[in-house]
Image (cartoon, rainbow over all chains, first blue to last red; front, top):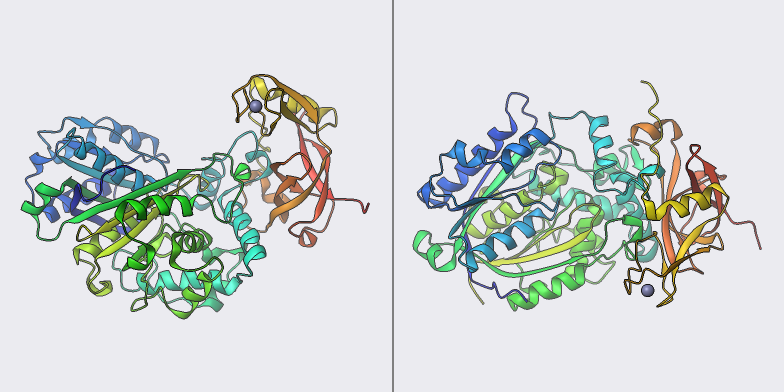
Length: 394
Length: 139
Ligand SMILES: [Zn+2]
């Protein structure tokens, strides 16, 4: 157990809208997100002493700039001791907050700026994106030669999960409908028009049973947040968001070697995170779940303990996860509706977690939200990462 | 659009015996001489006990489909001409290992979970032959 419970807090968040912005460069998204986070925290920028830029693996020149201090210079930060990249693909959110918190808790840092940005919406065309993702994180010896790619990876999990649990196409489409209900209320989301199960199930099949409208889209965008000690946070803001628990399990690199593609390490990761927080799924007011494909949102939702395995689909279908529902889930619309902004795209889901707990979520604000759980999973779902946050320390 | 060449396996020194095996019509896996674990995919050392005492053993070639998908759209460039084609995870029940492969020599829409399959070999280049699977002949 990491003993970080209640030691650190998030004091500021920043985000730019997700979409296609051919006129903007990736550094624009990074700097604008970071500036918004610093302003939101209301701190002097020179109090930031540690910068953690997230990897932008699909934009190599921009990635190199992030590694070599461009964020620090562009923002004119004068007291930064270290600028060091953090990256674990879709789990960068959970790993990033864990690393930031550990740095603060060990006194290696006092105020950390974490920033993610990329430009996959205009930096690459559709087939280029498919080809990139058909090699990145997929074994070049054991899977690439068979045509493996991210749609087929999601489809393999769907097929087996549906076979074992009786989950239907409607259930999986309902996850997308639920996320869209939230995106309708999110000005930063790319897809904001209501969508129906019928529309999703009549979109073209990519890899059976996965359909086009059950797949995330690549866009430009960025998100940032600022972390400091819980003690300092209380002097800075009236509503700090505390890290309460962290848990993770790294399971595989080669997808076909993962023994359980319908569960992964979620239950063990959740047990650690909830255990450290001293809370359970039943205590959560919000679930912010990484959703590059609906199957992963559904599996994580169930394994976190929000319901029995196989019962999640019904909950998404009948509105339990919608605005006003009993467990609001993925309240920014997720990658399926806000859009996927690259390897660190899950950072948007983390920032939404903070936004909700800070009471800054506008039209989609979950009333009286005190506790939230957030998840991330990188590569070909190589890990299951769970973080628990709250507005108070239980 | 010109058809892109198929990607060939990016092999390593310690996996070459596997590819030499498939060239000769054999599906090989490693068996640990110390703890008895069957190791696949091929490793430098046993992933259970770290022993380097690994010997190559021929597989029965029989397995079952753990999961599958028929790729109909948005395939990687080199595979567009093959659509629809089946990507599957096959479990080798006797050996207790699993692998990614394609199911061939059948209607892609006939493939089912837990269906018995058997290995066939498809030459990709002079150096590499891929192990693929087809529905098992009824036994
Ligand atoms: Zn061994």
